[in-house]
Length: 372
Image 1 (cartoon, helix red, strand yellow):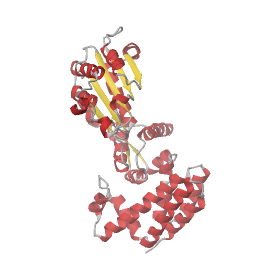
Image 2 (cartoon, helix red, strand yellow):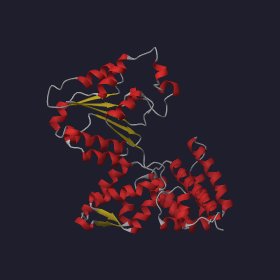
Image 3 (cartoon, one colour):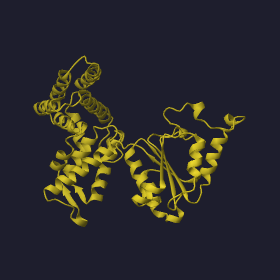
Image 4 (cartoon, one colour):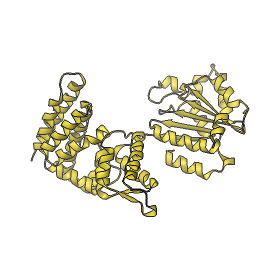
């Protein structure tokens, strides 16, 4: 289950019915951190409780050691909580070899692992005072017997990275939780800016929201209760301008509007700020790829919601799709194809020290001048 489902299920359980086994895994540490805090706030709510009752095993993979820690009677307090971080015993979905990761009965015949069996038995029937939390900042190998045991004995949460089209909704919800809301222009800008990202760094964005709150508070702007305080597009741009991928979005925005001089000026500011050039190259590549894909789909007659879905957007934002349509209709396909190839070459040359800013300047000029 994802974080929201995990939090909801946890909130429905009173303390006497909390499971004794938890697994938090996935590639987005932000949700794992929040899930872990939810568990610890229930099991060990005070600093003293955590000091006395929490044992952290970082990287421990020996079944014997794990079994002993999970079975140990608490010396202080009423509960003993073991946090197992990054244990290889769970495997890694990305790197696990099929033969090594498969804990099938056929493989185990004649080669019983008693230590692992003892650990699994303990996990399946934890002592009443004891709890275990496995934390893996990666997607685990679900074929492992230990995974199946954890899944059966307790709660399992998976934390996948948010994609760009999910991020604006997450930010809207997070701002709402803090007592703020985005004006339409701010939401449109933020949605477009975040589309420049492949995976969205939620930890960084959450930190930027903290800074935004401080910035607003300095201007005397605070949450106003049920109505929620409005945040403008100018405030959003100011707050998120330090993230290279998002600050670079201003260049793409200028290109979309055919404002070549502004795009080059913004690019110069990025250079002065020390932005890594391949980051800008990647932004431009993704945008040109989106132009070309949209052109193909428009030729097939797709418009509006159908176009949005075909572009992989899980939620339909009319203003964003209409803006993209206008932009694409104003771009020459032959020029876009040439620039795409040039950018792919520039990306390689930039990463290997065979070129500089002039490669991207040429692409920006070509894209800004591109017409039907």
